[in-house]
Amino acid sequence: MRIKCVACDVLARPVYLAAAHSPHIVDVILQRFGLHVTPHQLREVLQEQIQDADTAGVYDAVVLAYGLCGKATHGLKAGSIPLVIPRAHDCITLFLGGRGRYEQAFAECPGTYWYVQDYIERGDTEDVSLSIGAYTAADGDALYGEYVEKYGEDNALYLMEVMRAWQAHYERAAFIDLGVGNKDDVMLRAQEDAQRRGWRFERLAGDMVLVRRLLTGDWDDDFLVVQPGQMIEMSGDDGVIRAG
Image (cartoon, rainbow, N blue to C red; front, side, top):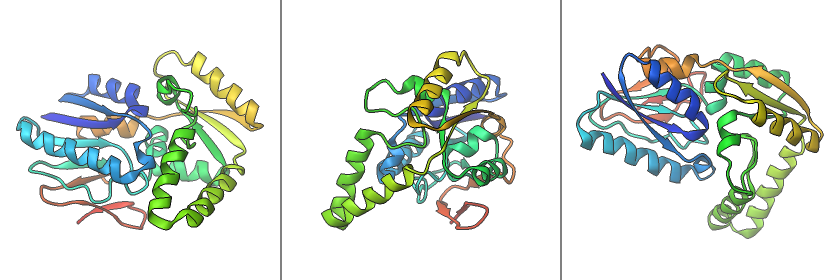
C-alpha cells in the first residue's frame, strides 16, 4: 500500500519515525503549524492535498496527522481513495496516545500550556510562542482581523479580551516527551518559559501509538475512515467526528 500522509509540522519527528518503520510506502507532506488559527485556510490547504493525491493516481489512501483542530477538518471530502484521520479534537491527543489520557490530563489540570519538541525547534521567528497551546502575536493579529470582518470591531475586541482572560488562568506547563531525538535544549527553553510566567513545570511521557497506527494502516475505532465521496463531519459526541 502507498500512503500520502499530510501532517502538521509540530508532529514532524514522530511522523517521520513512524513512516520509516511502516511496512507501507509513506510520502510525508508537512504543513506549517499555526494554520489552525484560521480554520478555513487550513481546510483549504488540506483539501488541496487530498485532491492532489487523487491527481497523482498512485496512492491507496490519504491519512491526516491532525485532529478536528478548531473544526478545520470538518467538511473535508475524500476523493477517489479513502481518507483517514484520528478521532481527536487536537494534536495533544496524538502526542499523549489517546483521548482517554488527554481527558485525564485535562481533568487533573485544565489550565495547562502544552510544549512539544518540534514546535519549539521550528518556532524560528520572534512572533512564535513556545507553546502549542498559545496564540502568538502574529496569530493574534490575524485572528483579530478575522473577528472584525465577521463580527465587527466591538465584538472582536470583546472576544480577544475573553481569550486573554482564559490564558491568565494557566498554571501548569507540561512538556510532552516522545523520546525522539535530543530534547535537552528545548526542554530547558520550556522550563525557562514556564518559570518566567510563574507556572509549575512537568514533564509527561508521550505515546506515539496513534501516529504509528495511522501510518501502518491499523485503523480501528480510534480512527475515522472516510470512504470515497464522503466527508468529515463533527459529531458532537465521544467519537468526535463521523463520515457524512
